Length: 329
Image (cartoon, rainbow, N blue to C red):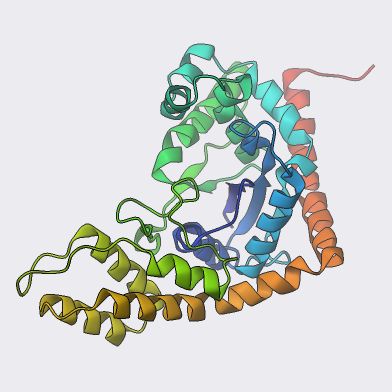
């Protein structure tokens, strides 16, 4: 059985893009693989070093992971900072990570360009922390997006480097987990790009029906087709793409035909799409409300996940220390 590790930042609510892009596949994956899913609160500090309420953010992501279908009896679901061995392995790996290679990572250069006044050491060593997250559980597969492929390759490099330096075959090189056609990209409501929190174009799993309807009705469209069978513009195609995953096939076909005939009414399209999204999200939304009110259950799940993750992580760190040569007097 493959061992899989993946995490998500703790800086905000999950949106439909997260759900269709990864979480839905995590739910499937937990049935066939040994999975470690963590809430990456350490990682969040690299760009948000002084969060207003870190614990509430972590709690909300835990709630939404559970509501979306992650089963803590099947997968190990835990908070990154509840496993202190992650920090120790990050330190040990950083001794063999070089400043030059870290400075050349695309994500670091992009973050420096966007936020030149927040270039902290944690941002520079982000790939080392990510490598520790993966290697500490001896993962063989890692679901990664396009923007994380370079970091996974660096993780593989650190595994090889550790093995070479200490003449061992201890760490396996984790492979990217490819979801193929199951990895859907959900566009935002602003007419361009993918759905995301920072872009302000997201539909969140915790949004109320009223919030969903309000957001969808404000979605960007165009001035309408001017002749039959005109090419569909990007803003309208974005709405069709979302409709394709939440609505009945006949609904999508109806509005596509209306567009082709130059008879489409965008108000009707948005109203239908909003209701279909509300219906699709409703079971998750209701579960979020239930879980949010059950602090005892959340504490139980967090403790259980921490214990399972600690057992795995402590074994790895103990063996790594022995390989390096640390001994107690």
